Image (tube, rainbow, N blue to C red):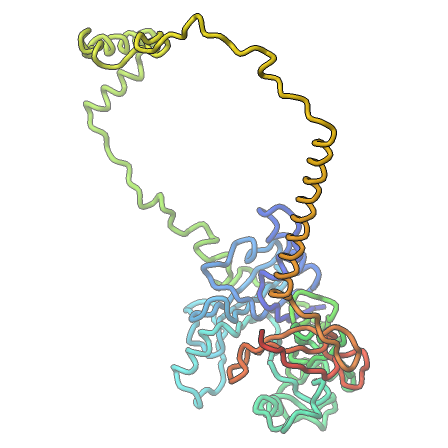
Amino acid sequence: MLRVVSWNINGIRSPVQGVGNEEPSNCTAMAMGRILDKLDADIVCLQETKVTRDVLTEPLAIIEGCNSYFSFSRNRSGYSGVATFCKDSATPVAAEEGLSGLLATQNGDVGCYGNMDDFTQEELRALDSEGRALLTQHKICHVIILGDLNTAHRPIDHWDAVNLECFQEDPGRKWMDHLLSNLGCQAGSHTGPFIDSYRCFHPKQKGAFTCWSTVSGARHLNYGSRLDYVLGDRTLVMDTFQASFLLPEVMGSDHCPVGAVLSVSSVPAKQCPPLCTRFLPEFAGTQLKILRFLVRLEQDPVFRQSALQLSNQTPVQMRQNKARVRSTRSRPSQAGSSRGQKNLMSYFQPSSSRPRAASNLELPSLGTLMTPKTSEEDVMANVVEGRAKASEAKDEKEVRTSFWKSLLGGPLPMPLCGGHREPCVMRTVKKPGPNLGRHFYMCARPQGPPTDPSSRCSFFLWSRPS
């Protein structure tokens, strides 16, 4: 059996950071290995990796027991990017970036790119430079397309298709109509060269979605669309596909993985194609190090001989040399020392210019230093006066507090939505236009079908400017 899985991972480092709890040195490698183990597939195709070659790390790219292949966006950092991880038992014969062959190298190309006369060389190169496609050739004489096609093909694949204008007129859906056969695996329904494997096995399954809005929390109520597919040519799907499935329980992205099981055994290639990441210079150990640019200088013979003599000296000889060096140093004259730095003890000698204290100075008597006793009335008066001052200070503090509270009232309480009478959430308009940057209130519940009472109601209220 051969199990293939596709997942729009929405940043390959995001799910890894959520899984890894080990030491930083091996966290990434173990986390990526856990993700592949959880998907439990012979071939895993990832989209939206959002890494470029300069930030790709070895623990992320090279996993024990797998060989990986990456295609990066050449124009934008943190954008697009795809990757394919194959178990060593499913090592491909060839691997290639892009769909047009313009990025292909001399060795390990897949070839067979089809008719592309409708596109110019510049258009094809710009498309492949975005890092959106990888081709791997295995010892199976059929074609499988899997990934995020960014289109809900049929109304059953979209949560709100009835309210969308011109649903069937969308260019993406028209393209898929020509690419795919009609729903079902009946022999008489064949129109396109490929079959949507999930609809072949589950033609009437509702709510089979693979993408949800994270902003509105739509995944909680399964309010999404099916944008991810596993497509196969008709003969392959009819003869070898055993199952097609979704994995909505796998978190870490706004998409969920999709996959299929084939009743074939992949014969691994003897050697990985040149595109394999383990052959990249930075991972293969062939990248030039900075030490290669540093050249050892030849030492002067005289300096080398003197250094050798110094290294052969005994500790006694070294001490004698140090003493000889000290004796040859010039010492300041005695006269100069008297006019120069002072001795530390000179600061502790009594100065003759300071007047001595008179011996007949009379000290005040003990009685004159004693304060007279206060009466009980004075003590009570002091206590009352202290309490009055404390009360005045407290009143003054309360007055100040009430003044600032009236001046700075703080945030107003959230209004209650009309459908559930629950506190709303504040959002900000990010769409360009006259309301860009304005705040508004809406229901805090997750988005869902309008018929579901537990989903978000239609409450909307503009926030008043402060």
